[in-house]
Length: 281
Image (cartoon, rainbow, N blue to C red):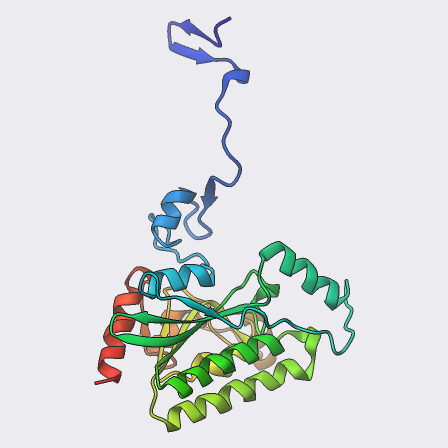
């Protein structure tokens, strides 16, 4: 029996003959509402073809984008967090860690690698918001510190791509200590005269923005990225007044001197290589 029939207005299909749409094939842009095909979105580096909104990209995506093909050597993938406080909120922290590791396939909220960008060898790390909001705990701080130390030991530039909701409260003071730890290692890198470039993506907040994410020799941000320490509501309630529109956007911070340049993700590799050429002349 045919699954369609003809009418004066054309051909009508029966409901049971409709094509099934694969789950996850389409994604709605949070900014303009456009419905984008996943393959096209991936091809455009998760930048909306309609409005240029920069969606989140995982560390593997950044490494593939930035590093020369075949040069990526992952580091520190066996470093995992403990639960020294036996912390429990809605669930045990140890259970949350295990569930997130199983869901994402990640050991924690950051990945590190060594690689090349044309004539430059680099030590690079990138954060991942999928892992407990990209929060910075002891593992994130340790991996970032190791990334910096590899730069010192091998005398090569360091690049860190930040993407974080801030400190990981489940680890208490151990999380806050990572701000000092990463900053101290960057001071040693600076003493050696080795370039450090920070790339701030959406969002970069809390203790991450208050430490290594804003300490680059050059601080780069992706368009529209939310960057700040506390959220707008907390700041508004603290100072008791309204805030300028978009005051935590990458563009606002660039215009007020907090970051150096806003770079479209599709141009990020070429811009970083150009900057490294200048910094290592």
